[in-house]
Amino acid sequence: MTIAAINALAPAAFVERFGFLFEHSPWIVAAAEKCRPFVDVQAMEAAMAAVIEQSGEDAQIALLRAHPELAGRAMIDQTLTAASAAEQASAGLDRLTPDEFEAFHALNDAYRARFDFPFIICVRLTDKAGILAALKARAANDRIAEIATARSEIAKIVHLRLQDALA
Image 1 (cartoon, helix red, strand yellow):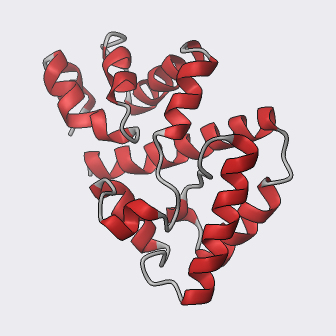
Image 2: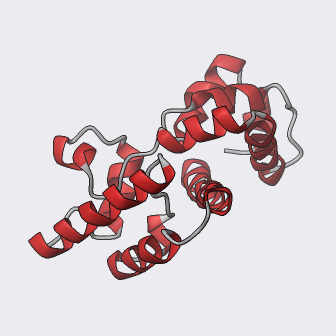
């Protein structure tokens, strides 16, 4: 899909086409749509990032909380979004050993207790061992640093999802 075709979409069609980019948060795409026409895909991504930046801390935390825990209940219940299910499977999170499963759950629980949102990482850019290492290391961050890191990881996720959608 070309940038001209993206810019030509009706507002509702734009949100329908790209609303999945942010986990359960199509409001970001809806707000960014108003910044069209975009000169290129990078400008589209920048507009979405600006929406998040300008949305304030409460909306940013809501965005973080909209993400599922890695190897969590949503995976077991099969209620992950299609994008999240594919991404988690790409990192092998759908094939954990019992010990790995327990490790993920213990670390996820500790992380959520510390930060009050789920651990977020672009799983397509790592593997199980890398995810576990990052989960352990990032638990030592302060809340402000971790919010920034989680937002940075979301930007990576969105970038890859958008590349796939435009391929």
